[in-house]
Image (cartoon, rainbow, N blue to C red):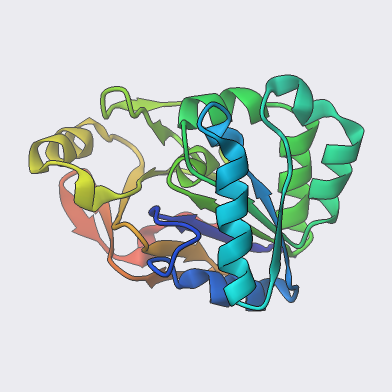
Length: 219
């Protein structure tokens, strides 16, 4: 069984991101496990508190998992928590730090297992970026290696905050894979049946050409 993967354009844990209600339903749970890894140096406790307050309005309970540095991603109790989670949320922050902490670790393996067993994994902003391979490099808008839960696809979150010139450059640099531009609060969702659905403003490009969702890769 393949689970649900949600790529969220940012604005997580606020009313700007209404997809969370649908993701709770898809997960069949009222518990959300939040990894504030990308915000490890930016008050991750505040991000978890924000998630808890937001999901409480949706009738759910969000808990943070302190995977903040690479050694944390091998702690057995944290790995077990991810493996048991039906809804795991990778929050925003630094995609480079998030990738370096999770790459080839037991926690990442547990995330993949959770998807393969039918769970929901959502990534917002930096979290969305790292779930794909390749990954947009925020330092210059080119591309680097991602974690590759979804391959042949890269994501631009908060595309509404990019200048037209920067967007054009990144499109021009994409070769051999698709590029999804997500407005803040929007989401691109890989459903359990392999279909893709868009929530909010999402555009998919092959180079400079906008293409249909039928071109997107499937697990």
